[in-house]
Length: 138
Image (cartoon, rainbow, N blue to C red; front, side):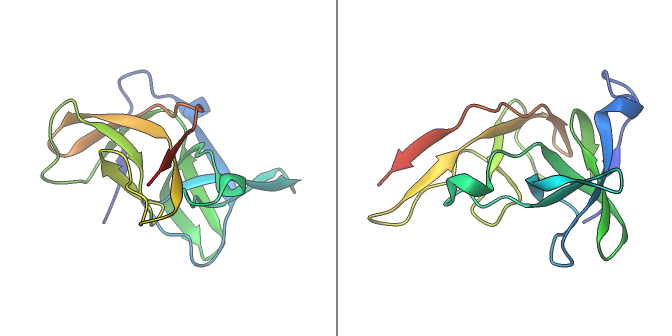
């Protein structure tokens, strides 16, 4: 998947942040702040909605310039998806990516639900993380 940032819709250079990430973090993953700023870079890694300490998402990785350096979109348009439903709310999925609709916990467990954006076209999402988490229990 290739995610492209769009210049319009309120997106500006201030809506992106260069960060240090894990080798396993991929483009399209929602990320949280995993540690202090080191060398001028935020430390981020992929969200896990089953673990409160690995939430909330502050944005979505849109580019990896190396195995451990990434660009995170904090606010603005992403394109590169397909088959999305207009006006659906996007949430952090169980695998840390974006999904339409909230994640569903497995039987006897829970997840922390976070809205991260909204579908504005069948291939575009407007990212605007809501930092309120709701615990969903099965």
